[in-house]
Amino acid sequence: MNLESRFIPTNGVRYFIKEAGNKNAPLILFLHGFPDSWYSWRHQLKVVAAAGYHAVAPDMLGYGETDAPKEISRYSQDYMAKDMVGLIEALEHQQAILVGHDLGASLTWQISLLYPEKVKAVIALSIPYGGRALKRPSDHMKKIFAGRLFYIDYFQKVGVAEKEFDADKRTFLLKFYAAYDAKGGVHHANNLAPEWTEDIKGFLDTLEMPTVLPEWLTESSFNYYVSRYQKHGLRPPINWYRCLDEYWERTEHLAHQKVTPPVFFITGKNDPVNVMNRKAIQRMPQFLEDFRGMEMIEDCGHWIACEQGERLSEILLSFFENDLNMV
Image 1 (cartoon, one colour):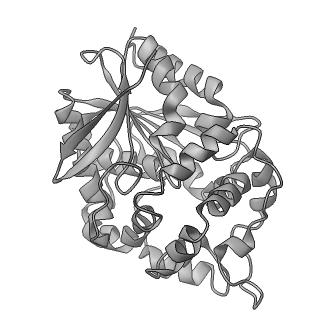
Image 2 (tube, rainbow, N blue to C red; image 1 turned 180 degrees about the vertical axis):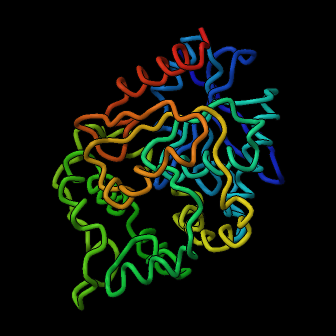
């Protein structure tokens, strides 16, 4: 099955999308995270479309061929939630099943809170919803990771991380992908925020350089990922992280609100992000009105769609058909 490409204008910006399947069938909207691309969903798009759905995956704001606004505040999740609502409507659907990974998962939670009528269900990968943060995110990170190099905190100073990463995009992506997969995740889980010593000049100094590509990543696929950062560089994707405080300040009204659509959560057993989110995973059910369960995939790190693509597709189709009765 071939994947079609097109651009969709929404909320004042233009999104690049890949899609497949019957455009009149239920919409499954796949949202990627950092540092990623629509491309990670390529296998799921075909499988889901073949099962009778309209499968769509955009390059998220600031990535690939999608627009990259200069204003940092434009990457706040309330603006991007509105983008996704506009995308759903531009695709001539009233609702979508949201499948999100990493920051894409974080965005699915916020779309569900802000626009529940647009969400038929949520399948969140890697990032749970443990309720709105009790403290300003930047203050919390500074307290918890004082004297250590934690990547989200490192991303906050404009111009620093993107200068380091754009200087050698291949090295950045290879180190990052390898550190968070099933093999690298076992080590990295205990070293998410290393002590910031004098010999550490930047974030990449904290990650090991693999001698070969990870087993789940071919040379051609890796080259494609690298190519998706040639147009905009890394600043726009990193800007997502720079809006955490701004969004938190505008969403006090969500503090006690629950996610109402049906939810299924998926994570890799060796995903180092689980260490950071352990408490959020434990308290997640109390913030969901219709929690259908979770699965922790064996021999899998953070890059679920790539590392265990077949298993992920099986879980998705089973959830659509058995939990949502979409046969």
